[in-house]
Length: 402
Image (cartoon, rainbow, N blue to C red; front, top):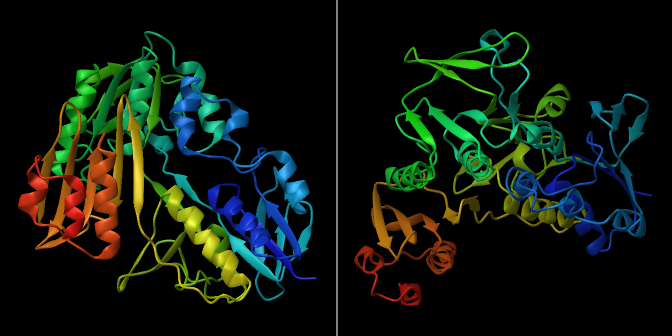
């Protein structure tokens, strides 16, 4: 009987095993996760879950009964320590497991501050898994003082939640502006104004020199020489793909575990999906850190394991919730040379990224209609006249006639 082993405990692993059964695979499936909880949603961790609006049970992608009903062996709190690609085995702390096909959904790991500048002090947190958020939750007390290092989406989402819970927040970003790596100046300005209106102190062009405290962090010295008292710190300075197992097994690595268009690694019996995997896209190679990508890529790989020979065609989209604003992003903005602003009422706005006459992406704030229209246009390879996009009286649905 064919044995498929899946390593990882997130959206990609759940999508992979569910789609194997959905498409009729009747062989043996084993899912191994180093966490004690079955595969669960991660985006709500730092938002609804931390705010107390979502229970731990609701985080789970499937009830415990699903794995038993689908005859999927679920091994939790089990860390895979090595892959022997020649023997087609994986090693854990307690045993060796043989596989016919292996799927790596090993995600990504948050970058941490170096110990030399206080990164190992108590009260210094990253945001990735349930244990991370459970560990930081007691710090979110009315009147507490938080330092957030990094002005990307993780840092901004953490700032929004902390502020809602009555925490005084200072956010530092080494770059000239928040979101500089991922968004246009217009989007940065929108979210800077949003956060400062809620009392967050944003300090751009300022880095962290070091954290201070005996065992627990009590203050931070910034790169401009200022000292600020802090009760806890959240670090949001990006992630690194989980390639350690793959690299040690001799698989090709290129900004993640390198796969072909169908999800195979350099070993034809090993596949990779989600945040850990890079794949061909529009003549280049990308790695997408998003829930939709993890789900969709794993679903295609499940079919390909069963012989579909189907290429994965990514349609990038992302979202972020901050205060009463939902940001929805469609497409990838790399290479843009112009921004077209479509202004709505109140906090409603969208920024459309163009390269020449070609629409690349959109950032839509509280504007689901603009987002859906832009997403459909991008997927169809169509680009509306920027003058029509800019005109708030031009109906969004009519942009689809581009």
